[in-house]
Length: 387
Length: 164
Image 1 (cartoon, each protein chain N blue to C red):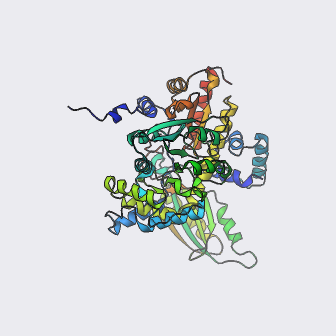
Image 2 (image 1 turned 45 degrees about the vertical axis):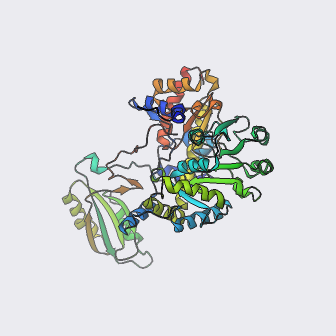
Image 3 (image 1 turned 90 degrees about the horizontal axis):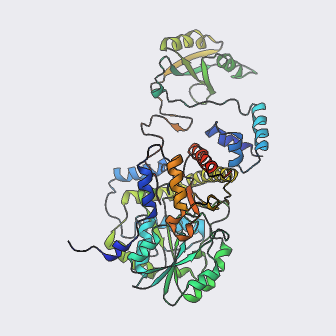
């Protein structure tokens, strides 16, 4: 048989995949390893999808998604985030944030273009860049700077070949956020270089201690920003696979070209569910956010008391805990924690080299579950001599 | 100052310890203990219960019925005196005064249908000022205290063990 694509062969298997295989073979594993809400989709949202099927709404929609949905998206972003996009030609409804990232990369990249990514970062960004023929260039983020993107680092990373930077705040896996003031310092650099920004804002609603900020709020660079967002995290709708992009018309047109050939249109029932989510689901969002905040406090305060000094992350549902004290590598720590106490966390290195010395602990679990897992982690740490 | 938050949390999970509450509210443990004590002393927290799925527990000899009770309210006392005469029976688990067609809704528990029926006819119906009763036996429980219990699926849902 003929050889498969070189690019695909060269893609590194996800570090998460390796860990998943390991954890999946074991009985009685308590996981703190998932990247999706534990809540079921609020029932009124499901009902709306069911109703749409009763009504025979089972056909393709417009490529960019139902106009009714795009209008709701535009309204939601205007009212909640001060982001202004035209539902007619600046919004595309996609199959999850994942497709949105993929079409954004493919619409921007010429072979050899450099795309800056932050390290650690979500596992899908680099493969999307590589599959589109781009070259990932890293900026290392540090715990000391709360995993924020600093202007001097951005400046140093930009070369004549740089096409775009991929960012994600609040961040999976670090829980780090950027404030309006943090972004403000980046604006002149972005303006001068003219590079695009793909801003994955999927955790926007899970910003606990300050108002969510976005580069798309700055008029000077608004046309350079491609916002990626979706329903998975805020509305607990991961399985519906529904996201969207917000961008200027030109970029949106280019992305639509790819989207229409590859996807045609996002699932129709899911789009109807999403309309209901945006119209009547905000109290659910706030209820779940409050619960995440409680769990975060429970987890972080317990980690600190058991001898793992951990700062309070300001967003998402992840804690990026520093385990350097243990003297173990992230991989070893997670493997030993799994084999010894059957608790599954994800090694920080699954998200990039800068993740060494950290583990990602998800708190998208019930309090009971978190407490049991913490009890086990505590035993594990004691065995390592950490108290 | 944390009273409402403590109540919210304990309403959902009465097993949260003072240390858990302190962690969740980012507060000192002794402060929390004081608050909980005062909530208990003031009878704002009146008890701690367990939500049981009786469909599964197969504890036979447990029958529940909702009794709609109509009564004539009394001058100066309204409904309260009659209500207390019913509510004081240990067979009564829960009782409300309602708007609409019936006055009281009374949840009664017993070991057999006969026992519940006897309680209604011999006790509730005979209480002074009670005009009529209507007994509705519980066949199956679907949800209680905000918890779905008729769902055959496991609580820990079908999420994968580790995802990005």
